[in-house]
Length: 596
Ligand code: ADP
Image 1 (tube, rainbow, N blue to C red):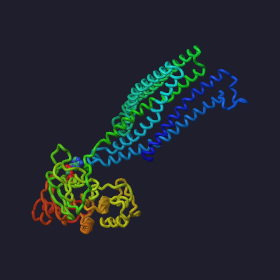
Image 2: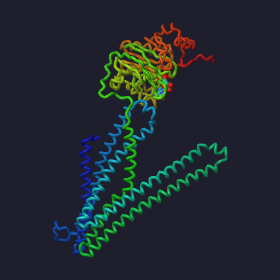
Image 3: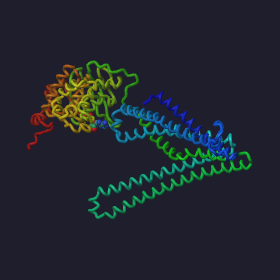
Image 4: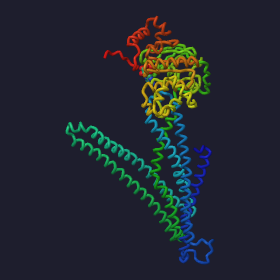
């Protein structure tokens, strides 16, 4: 992109070229007039460059050459202007696209969860294109045409009189009004045609997809009639479109020819009165004809501007949406000091009108310790992590990191202090190394490999033919669930954030590997004193946690160490007994105690 200053000077140059082109093209009828007048006075002057005539004398042949040159020069300037301006519109489109992209990334999670990504990208694509179309139709078409019409009217007024100028302006006004009106009516017809076309294609496909059903019920003739009927609708709509176009073109021509003929009649009267020459008649014809050329595109331009305005409005609406979660103005960065966490009477629900999911939840996680959260599915465990990461804000109460309310600090600084291993791991369709380094792009290869080793992923990667360069496939589909999870763990470790959140990080990993990962992870977190919050389904993984809380329907049911909770003999102890009864370590990560 050229930057705003470059765009400004390029726009100025394009506008200057536009004025130059129009002023040049307006010379064309005048040159022709002088040539005709010259010929009318002295037909023998038609010989090209006769001997002895100095070049400074503008003979009719020279005027003819100038006529051609002016036409060519005007076109040259117009084309140069278009190509110059293309870089301005492209740059504007690029800036709009990047700004929109940034805006979309700044929107909160609930915005994206409630949005279809396909529809979103179409809105952005159309809106971005509309910016370029609006800019270029304005600068390359609307402004030049308005300029040309004013200059031609002024020239007609000065050289030929008010009647000529008034006739031309009235013709143009009528022409525009007619074009806009008919074009708007045609848009509706065109829409009907598109709808009929879609319906016909739909019935075609539908019928063939249901081939078997059609045969079961011997309904071929019925299907054919249906298809034929939908094609008839389409045919009528298509005929209407073609007919209305013919009407538009013919009407435009009638209006314009009427105006032109009126001007020529006026000129003929002036010639009869001796106040105009033959050359003047030719000039009037040339000038009026000149303004008709851009008018041919008027209907198309009108349609484009209307469509682009709609697309742009949709984009502006999108850009006008404010994220529900954003840094407060002037919010300071998080002053991370070890990473102690505190929930202080936190209530939260996804829907404002529904009863809250978390009900006055309070707990503490001292810096460098590990908290495990267990509880039934849907009890709000993942929601706790989302509140910590500020994907959502608490409805009541406070979430504190190192004594600072997460709502009072800069969101980016907050998120850079937290590494997350999500429940569903989604990867970019790039190499393993790329996905690993997503945790910290500047990490060295050795650091990436060390993280992979901690997550027990190194041997699996080294066993692949392309090693760290293996491309993982769409959303990481070419990796097993366990490999994806281990990659997510390695990626999170590489981030070297003081706080680590794991949401069932090892649910797809076998228990032996899981045990190895947690042993390594504990060593690693102990060295670097990382605060860790982990959600676990398999209780064997939380035995060593400094504290375990049991969540029941958004409320703290039990809390303590593994030993304390067992002694308590509550829900945790019951779950523990149940999971122990499942027959010890299972290799698949799921229950394997079925007596097969
Ligand atoms: P857990 O992790 O304990 O299984 P979650 O915290 O993921 O539970 O979710 C708790 C409840 O909130 C579930 O009933 C779930 O359907 C609901 N929920 C989760 N995310 C959203 C969301 N974005 N919008 C609305 N409801 C949600």
